[in-house]
Image 1 (cartoon, rainbow, N blue to C red):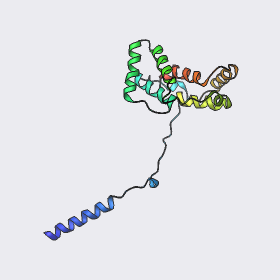
Image 2: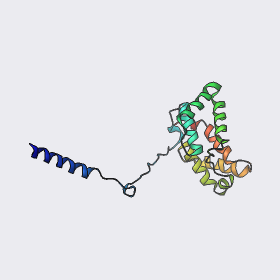
Image 3: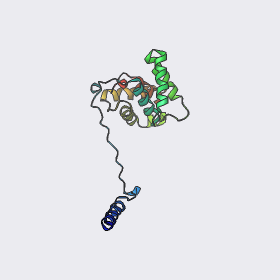
Image 4: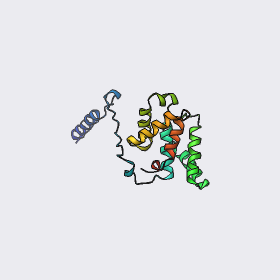
Length: 167
């Protein structure tokens, strides 16, 4: 009986010793999931909830997540004001005026250095799609013909657009 018990213990130890192997970081493979871009705005049919909109706009502006508590507080702002569009303007203004963390908005110099890249990046960042040629031309004209037009104002307009409310 003891011999059978000894074999069972040795067998268990062998299994454990082969299974408990520490993985090295170098051995791991990290992959990035591709994000499917929408072919057009017409594919977006579901309206974001207030919490989703707050979380997404914060992520688009800062390139990091907002805590659940802060999402709740911002949602209370929308509820307390009543006028959802005005509340969204207030929330975006507060986010953009934040100094900690700083919003991840390109500088106006960077925007004007490569307008097409700025337009494409902004559409993909906010609307998860590529702009049409007409949209590109509109923003090229807007940026080129208005020297005071800033990247911040363009980001603000994307975050308040009707299309941004849907996914």
